[in-house]
View 1 (cartoon, rainbow, N blue to C red):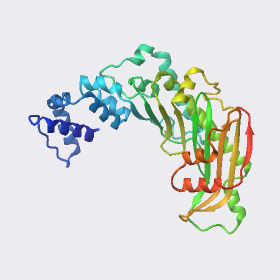
View 2: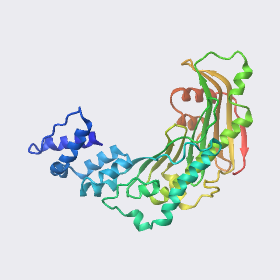
View 3: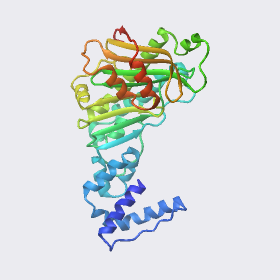
View 4: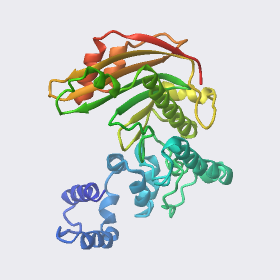
Length: 354
């Protein structure tokens, strides 16, 4: 934020040579920030000569919600313009205790998160939620409440503190799910990577990813995690009709829930079926590909590689598996693993709604 604001001030100073001149020393960060605060008032005349469009461009570049909320206290003009920011990024603070039992981690996380959301909905009126109080810079636990301070959100990224799947054994599972009213597609990849030499016993490699039952179980776990995250987003989607893209991810890079403009429109038109604080997963068909061992071009050994493409049973395939999978995991070892798996034989599984 500091750098961007300084650039704006320098632009203004270039066009107005009579404005106050700055000189900040980098050696002492605290002194620099203190000096910046003291000079804000003396330089507001310079800011006043910047057009609103440029200020909003800076705010959109900042994007961080907590920083933008703090910017509201700088001036009346900032307080007026911050709610018009279109591109936002919000990092959700940790909401689970570190000693939570690993077997119930997913359930504990979402119960804790949703409790803060429900508390807000039962104690705050719609008018209060839409108000823009100049001094309201307190960071709250509910994303819906925090985002109520913004009126023109078009692009939103939410980041959770961690992933939901704790599989152990060095197994990496990543997924990307697209939603509208309910699940549209989900691509899941799982494997164990190792730069060491390949085991001489093929049976050891086959056990890395588990048998078919294990692969189905972590596929179901990924779908449950995705549907729980989608449930969290519904309130935000209904309150911000101007949104065009929405992404919910986690800091561990495990899973992404994405919604486009059409998907959010579907979500607003009809309530999704819910169960146990998550959106119901519809009846689906799962196309699975599995290879016990792959040696990638970079020399990394990938064991138990599995690719699963999940789609609702009653919907047509508008996009083929390759486009979905490469779009979800299109870089590094994930891209090469996906490319190799797409060339292998696949088998279809079907599952009822759950």
